[in-house]
Image 1 (cartoon, helix red, strand yellow):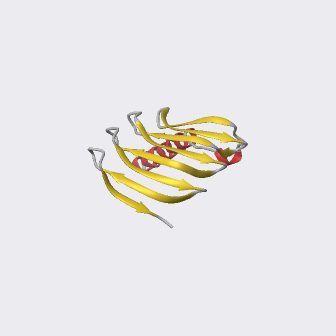
Image 2 (cartoon, rainbow, N blue to C red):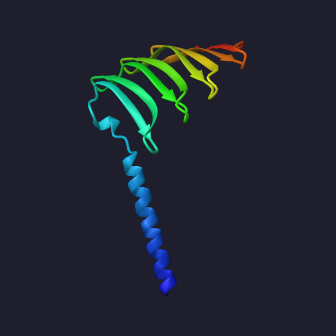
Image 3 (cartoon, rainbow, N blue to C red):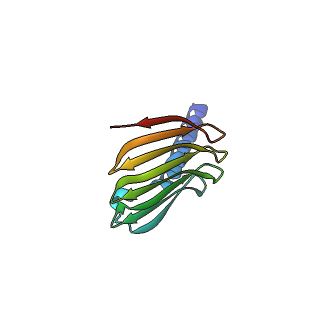
Length: 125
């Protein structure tokens, strides 16, 4: 009986610790009226992204980062919609693909090999 109670206490402590950890990393962006730069940090305060807001709406360059801090992707928002060229990089820093957006819709994607040569060029309607 004593072993059973110890096991229950251990499970409760583990669940409480996991809940506390999740609360530390919980984002409430939708409930905040943000303006300006917002950095996103997860898991031991590692920076995983940067976003820019105007009156609570994404507006500006957004960047995401690989676990080692190198740039993972970079794209532009205009009044909450993706606009322009979005670039995505491998962990080694090579360009993986580029997406072109117009008014929030993807219109083109170019994929690259490790040498930087275009291997695919797709147009979307």
